[in-house]
Length: 355
Image 1 (cartoon, rainbow, N blue to C red):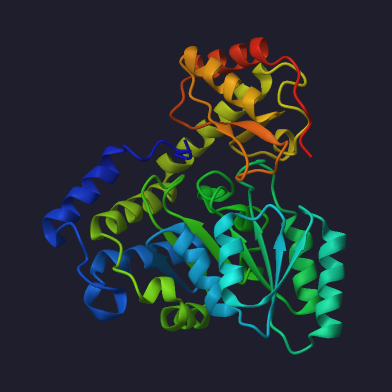
Image 2 (image 1 turned 90 degrees about the vertical axis):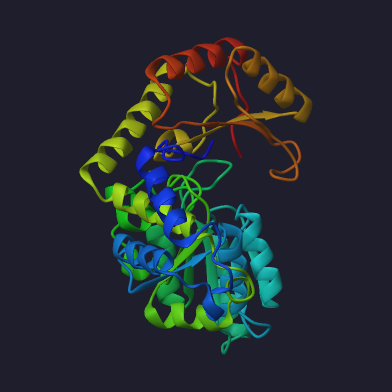
């Protein structure tokens, strides 16, 4: 589960959703630009902007819609999008729909990214260049080298879109993500995220300058041509954002990190391989297996022990890189973490190092 803080069934979020249903009903009834913008949407966007430290925010019906709509809106056939190879499918699809020239750089490979930026500067001097990456990569659990990426984007005059889907709620003060943890919020042009993981609800968002948000309101097709998110979802998401900004929210986040540390210390050397996640820190632990059939068999063996650890296969990951994706949440008990470590140590004493 991506419910990193265990908020999906939190009573405060349920109460917020119930109250919104009582006042506004179960649906928004129209798109945001017609009559679908209700006070819960306005409050959510204000809360997101304040929490993320940006001028404005825009809520979408899903994280996928946020990615596709934003890239389609900010880039066109005359522009260049530079994508990390392991970027989420929504970012890839958005780049394709934009019609821009797409160049992919190997995962977290700053040298190749720099060469792409040099090419764009030389061959496409009038193009808008957008660097696209994830803060925490969903299948490997490692982090983007954000400080170096910011340096490159400044040097070449590019824009930077950072997908914080798996870092918000987990990393940084009050769970504000990798950009806040690195003190680089004002240097990231577009912060994208989801309301459906650590925040426990559903939907996506963009946090950026007021001018970027105004542009998206008028150009992002996945925002314009769809019914607004249910007001109950917006109200529950606002409650989640407010929780993260509270002392109780920070305690919950620290509890998550205690569980992450417990799993790390409980695993014997080599079980998960030498992945960046083991060193840089996230709630995602990829157990690289390689063979798809073996990954499924291991997943079933864990399920027989009362542990739900899904097997991830092609096309989600590359062929030959099948894995078990272990995710830790604050809702896991110490006993569950201990059990998981013991079973993994027994079933998989050695793992293939992640590429």
